[in-house]
Image 1 (cartoon, rainbow, N blue to C red):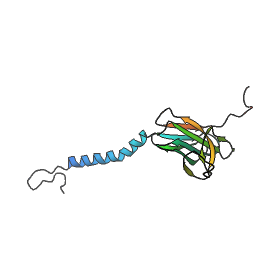
Image 2 (image 1 turned 120 degrees about the vertical axis):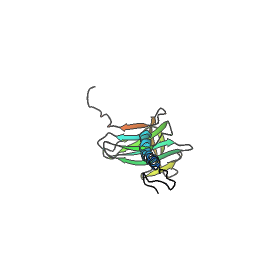
Image 3 (image 1 turned 60 degrees about the vertical axis):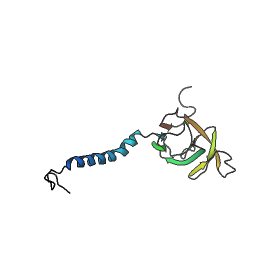
Image 4 (image 1 turned 135 degrees about the vertical axis):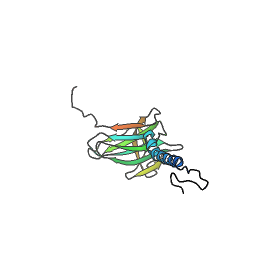
Length: 162
């Protein structure tokens, strides 16, 4: 190996400065590639804007089946990525439980869940398959590549004006 400024046997100067710069540039590009791709990455995120701990389940259609997954446990005033990367569906479904106030965020799209951590393929015959049938609310992402859902405290009856 030649040092910078050392001469080859034929008297020519060894040029390792240029290749060394190329190798360094390539290594730097590789180091910055993950950071750059993270910035461009899209996600489905959920933010818990309540004062309670919340459990969250999601439902979506992948290439072949309906899938439900849970549980993400979010402490108060925190956010979590539920689906990393570009969104594969336009519609996602959310069901959430307020562990401290015993409330819930649900809807009319029924899917399968269970009490412990789960990934369930299919939304039919939940009870017959040993799961719970749970109502999720729909999120229409409008075909965006990323989306954030914010759970907030429900409006309480009897507060404020008429």
